[in-house]
Length: 415
Image 1 (spheres, rainbow, N blue to C red):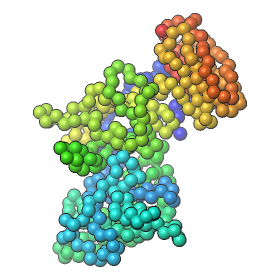
Image 2 (cartoon, helix red, strand yellow):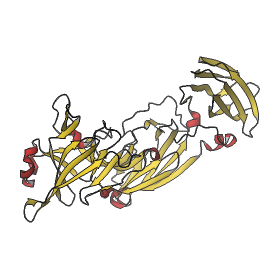
Image 3 (cartoon, rainbow, N blue to C red):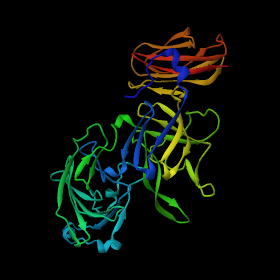
Image 4 (tube, rainbow, N blue to C red):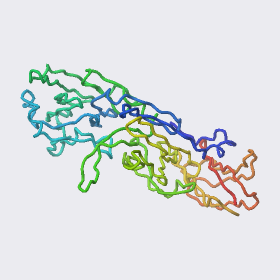
């Protein structure tokens, strides 16, 4: 777990927790790469976007989902698997184009096909109650940027995906021999998706471990209002499925409290930038900030500072860890702790819930590490308790709350 709430380096945490970090990343010219970023470790991971065609959700035997690479057009060519042999690219105008959801990783383009037979239609296939296997019913065609066509059919899903595909030979107007492959859920057990390249007939790794990223910079399709709604390919940031994000227009230091954190993966999306036709360059919104809450409830304040666009794919942003400013911390054992106001003068109100009978303690330290106040608190229940800080000099302090073998620290400003 990427927790930073453990009481490590107590006397320096308040000094560094709000330090702003400048981050420079690049998707490469023409957005060659997809880039993943981890806030807690300030690490990025880059993968060539063209290395994969289809992403297969692999998180459990009952989690089913497939996404198409945004550089490939996906069509439903037929809802009858018996048409496999007679699919003809000359009929492209009659096919239905399908898109990944821009709000949910698990709602991939294949799930938006027409197999909706109740109650177990999965878009591309139907679940069989007898043997608990999803059998495919839809014939798809993938169209690449170089006008290569591949037909694709998912034969079944049972703890993995078995599928077949073939490539169109324009010179002979025929399909190649079928290739049959299986991508098992057991592949890459520390990742959300498994990836496959139909071009190269192989599985590929195209994302870091699920604990190693929070947002992904990529191209994706979304609906844009251009007088009328249209589906358009854009470039932006999509968040990890276990990450929530709040967007706020603000100036000054900001506040991670009282924000609306939502799970739609395009909460950051593309809106932090806009194209300036006169300057032939991108402008970055000066007052739009994002609060990114990771799986461990750490919160990072994100503000974009530049975006070069397709010419280089370079982008930059500032990020600061504002976890210590949160009014409430939730512990793994179900306990919680918060206090207000902050900044404070004279006294603060301690709010905490303790679900197990154990020692509960709060202490305040000066920035030099001197303990200036300590108090044992009641346990086994929900409490609010006033704490007199009138004897403390104006300045910055660290408040530490401990419950059993867990603790958290927050910055306290005394006025």
